[in-house]
Image (cartoon, rainbow, N blue to C red; front, side, top):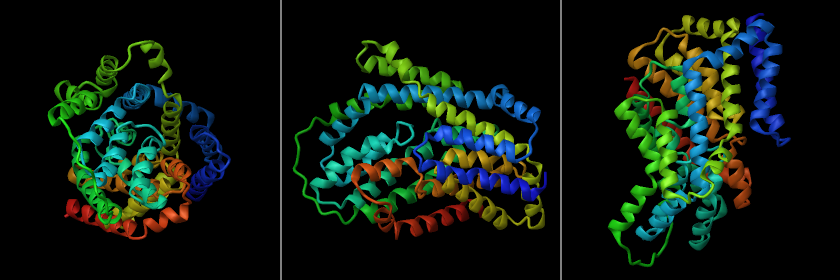
Length: 408
C-alpha cells in the first residue's frame, strides 16, 4: 500500500473518535472500531493482523503493562470504595488552615487514583470550597483540572508512563520522571499564578494535633508509595509490588467482603483500552509506508530542532484528536523507536513526545476529566478556555524552555 494511502487510513480511522464520542460510546469500544477501520483500510493482511494481536500477548513489556494496569485498577477501586484518600483529604483540611493550598492539594491527592475521568472525584471538594470563597464555576473547573494531573508525570505506574516503559523497555523511567519534574514545576507554579494567587480568603484558625495528622497522612497514603519503595529495593515489576498496596488497603479499610470487593474493582474497561492501544500500535508498525514517511522526513532534514518539531506536532495532534495521552504515545513512540537516537538525545525526544501528547490530551474537548468536570460544575467549554487564555501560552513557553534546557 502506498505511503499516501496509509496516511489517509490513519487520519480517517482516528477521525472517527470525535464523531463516535458525541454518541456517548465507551472509549474502549471507540478504539476497537478505530482499530478495525485501521486494519481494513491500511491493507494489512489477515495473517499480519493475527500476528499483531498475538504480539501483544507474547511481548513481555506489553504483558507487564497490561497486568500493572489491571492491578492499578484494583487498587484505585478499593481506595475509592474504602474512602482511603477521603481520610487523607479530611486530615489535610484539619491540618492546613489555608483554603488556597487545599484547592491545589485535593485534586493532586485524588490524582493519585489513576483512573479515567478521575477529576470527577475531586470536583465536589473543589466546587464546595470554591463556592464558599466566591470563585466562578469556570475558575473552579480550571483549578480542578490543572492540579488533578500532577501524579501522571511522576507516578511510575501511571498509565502514560507504563506505555513509555512498554514501548521503550531500555529507557530508565526514573530519568524521564526527573525530566518531567522540571515541566511539572512550571505547571504547578503557573497554575498557582493564574488561578490561585489572586484569591482573597480569610481562614479561621483550627486546633490540630500536627504529629497525629502527619502520621495519619503517612499511613493512609502508604498504598501509593509502598509499591515504589519495594520496586526501588527489589526491581520487581509493579504488578507484583502493587499486591502490597492491596494488602495495605486491606489493613486500613473495612475487611468485610474484601475479596468480593477486590474482584469488583477490576477495571476491565481500562484494561481493554490498553490492549486495543497495543494492537493499534502493532498495526502501525506493519505500515511500512507511514514509517517510511517519518524516516524520509528525518533523512531529508536530520537536525535536532526539526526532529523535535515533527514529534511535538504529531504527538500533540494525536493527543488532541483522541483526548487520550496513552493512545497518542502508543502511536508515536513506535515511530520514535525507529530513530537511530541514543543516550540523552533519546530521552529528549521521548520527553518532548510525552509533554506534547499531554498538551493535546489536556486541552482536547474529548478529555474525559474535562468533560466530567464541566458537567459537574455546569460550565461550558468556551468559559473554561477563557480561563486558559494566559495559562495555555505560558505553559507552552515553559515547555519550550524545558526542551531547550535538556536539549542544550
